[in-house]
Image (tube, rainbow, N blue to C red):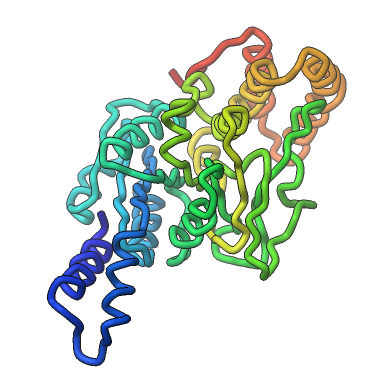
Length: 339
């Protein structure tokens, strides 16, 4: 657990056991005890892969989180940039798991989820290392998810890093005929001031709160995806197991977006195309899969290829999408070219 979280628990515990501090009445004392007892335990899992600077900024933002029952776990996916040594020195109270190799988003986060459950987590927060959080994030998400035990997965409003002027993602719905995500900006619902909790098909994988009962019911992420579409698969599995997936519009994170793409050209293009097809093969009906394949290969595939060449002039992106599409059709899973 981060330092401020431990300090808050200790102070509130002392108040409950030994009486009020100066100026605090018995009612305030009672309320402090209730807050400590009632707050469900949240364990945050931050996945790091050669992202020392981004991860450090993420951890610094977690230090400011106002929540009394919080722990943080960093899962290092075989980094070679000296990340682990720096984190052990700068964040000695944080639990660090070293996987020894790159297990991808799904495998790395699964290691963190298992550790979180061992630590008695009521909720596990999966948080990308290239995201920073608002001080009230955990409180906002647990308030939304804790209001109904049927809510299994809860996600925040995701803003572009450094601004609240542009919403990067909210919650989304799946267009099963085209294998596309609808309702996530641009063109999707904008957050209001009402603080609504809205049922959706999926929430953004950079930040999602998962109830422990979901993990017990469906397990962790499907490691066949490795990276991209694994959180979408997870949300669909949770819903089909009887849980609700919701977007808590008043909760906030800021996401830098594309950290993996910046490190390795072709990475996102390969996994987006391959895993989109794998996802549809896994979850769509036969008629939906047929319509998707016809749409994708007759139209969208070529449109995306042209976009990559026109905007980026990067042949690697084009060949990666082609290879990913072929591997998706052939049912190939795992790390692919990044084994």
